[in-house]
Length: 118
Image (cartoon, rainbow, N blue to C red; front, top):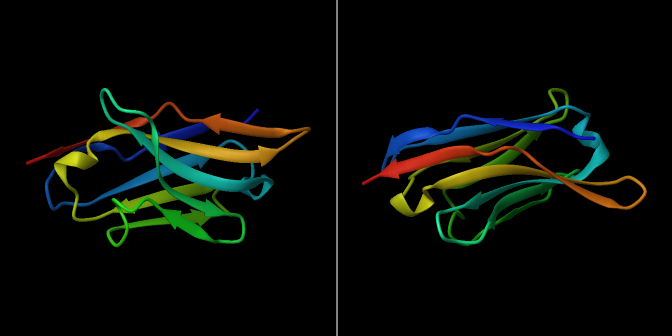
């Protein structure tokens, strides 16, 4: 069982920045991919960014150029640095871990609210 705890959300003005953190209860070296997803009211959950064990990253087009995902294997943590925030970035942000343990398994955190005011 993997537990993920997000932190760092909050209320920020448009153009501002936030850094989200995700702390894992196990070594993230066990995972193949760690990611951040978000879900706005009335919308489906969508991928924001992901990072593999090898450090390869993937970003949604809507956040490219103003968002950076990173991982600290020693701290079992993954981070999402978001700059130039827009009101449309408002959502609950979820941390996700993908790992193989007798089959592919996916774990989610409880989410952290990000609200961007105009």
